[in-house]
Amino acid sequence: MLTQFSFVWKREWRYIFGNHRLLAILIGIPFLYLSLFGTLYSRHVVNHIPLGVLDLEDSALSRSVINAFSDSDRFDYVLSLDSQKAMEAAMERGQIMAAVVIPGDFSTKIKRGQSSEVMVVVNGSNMIISNAVTNAANEIIQTLTAGTIMRKLEGSGLPARAAIKFVQPISLRLRVWYNPTFNYTNFLLLGLIATISQQVALLYMAVAMAREKENGTLTELQVACNSALAVVAGKIAPYYVINFVTLNLMFLVAYWIFQIPFRGHYLYLLLLLAFFLACILSLGIFLSVICKSELEATQIAMLVAVPSFLFSGYTWPLSAMPPVALFIARLLPLTYFCDNVRKIFLMEVGFPVILPDLVVLAAIAAILFPLSVLITKKYYLQKETLAISGENGNS
Image (cartoon, rainbow, N blue to C red; front, side, top):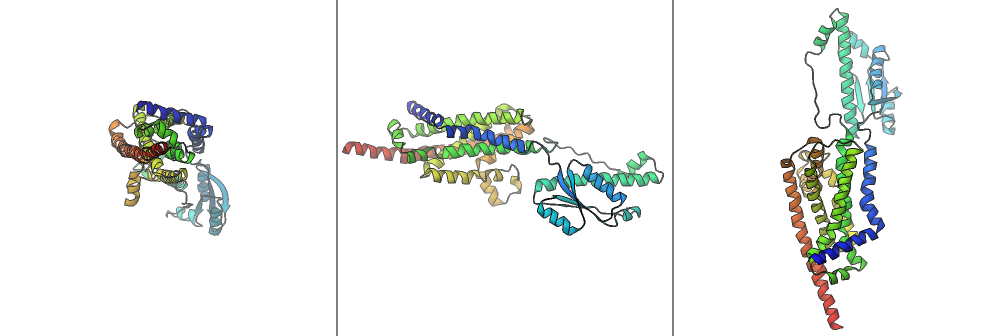
């Protein structure tokens, strides 16, 4: 069997290196997407959100509110508005993503000692922007509120230090762990790397056997090998090596070039990569042996790969998914890989944390790999080999 495995292994390597387009896709495409996504999130946080202002009072106090927003790095004050209709039109055209509305009696109420409201309108179609606007606006308004009360108390003769205690009898201290700067590169890039690698590995593994049928090269494989295990393992092995090396290099690029901190143990990352690739390539070869053509294999592979990131729990938590979506998520290998990569990089988790997911990945591979071997033996070697032997006997 080892000789037959070696034959398939060498044959697959020759095919990969003889097909420059395939080699470029296997190695080049992941790094191309890594560069694109890394550049996309290179600013780490959302700043310079286009802001419109509808100031219905135009007083010194209302202008101080406007200045506070325009001085913030989060906002770019791009448009002065004269009506709510103009605000709606500007938001629909994409000129602004948020707007500050100051009422006509803003300063009058404050001077009377009454509460006055500043309204912030945000385009909620983009949750990342709406979250950034909400957090920044809260911070600005709280600062302005404290400053206004401070000035009134100091004006009444209260010392500044006593005024601070009066304004802020209870202080809030916020501590954010693992990603304290809300860095979107740290948040998203690792998951995108995992997703890209899954798509490349799954897509090209899924056509490995279907390609043999369509190209008419299956006979060569049948003549050289009578071991289905050697055929399946020999098919998987080159893609396993290429993807293992590529994924490691991509994570190194994420660490060195895009400055994503690595706080965990590298051995745990290697184990996770090893189990994930065994699982995803077993899924790929299984699709390849049950599909009748490259097109069918490609379609099913994409059907699995495309929604995987959304269902993986990486951005939308599994705990918030409805039962049907959670059931689908539990069937996808990426669910057991993506979040663990982030935990190893950012949270310094130990082996017991990733062990349950390693077991699941191993279980999926342990089911799909033997099934692929059995199907290959029944439909790719035994059946066709008997037909070939019969033809030789008749001749």
